[in-house]
Image (cartoon, rainbow, N blue to C red):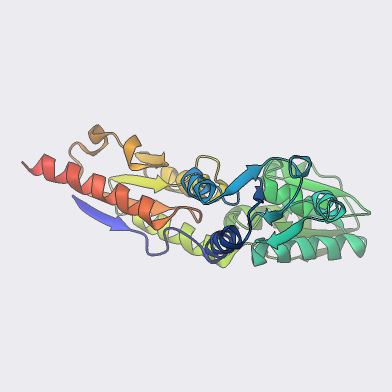
Length: 283
């Protein structure tokens, strides 16, 4: 079987930065927690726990030491609670996420009704939402939800950094019909768009597509959705152990991509597993 691997598969800049900050902090600090998983990769979170970085699900669980702010960012209320407890902060928020937070704060402060394109329950979206103070804030996932928005004189739009550009564009077009003034910040990370375009290209040339990454990872799930629209034989997996050899019966080409939180050693294990299945099939 021919195996095509996306060039950009694996850690993005923000995830690599967050992981390195966590490792550096663990090496010099005895008591350290991340507020929520630092990235959406159970394998990386486990390795960090082995280094001493424990996951706390609320600030109230942390009594002393340092707190790593995950790459997705946190809410303003959590930041205030961390300060109140006089905990050391290691800010691993992705710079692109910070930009989205700043734009949300700016639009809200200027009196725009804010439309935040993203998934309501995602921690990044909840963090961005918390920066919009003093006006209407709407979280919408797609154009159908945007159609239900009330009309407002002035509307501002920002996006969760891992959103698909096509989805963002459709929502912006809907918002344009619902206001007199529209201000848009394209807060989608460039790395996200590159990954999605590569995934489309590889999926169109493959018989089977493997998308590697945490099941709780929004950007990985979106890659799997994009690939599945092109090739139904798309499998979202976290590790090589989940691969079923029957997926490759009669298959000549396999495409591989991975989310921005997927470490390269996990990708390598998947590729090695596929190669071993291909060799058995040749015998």
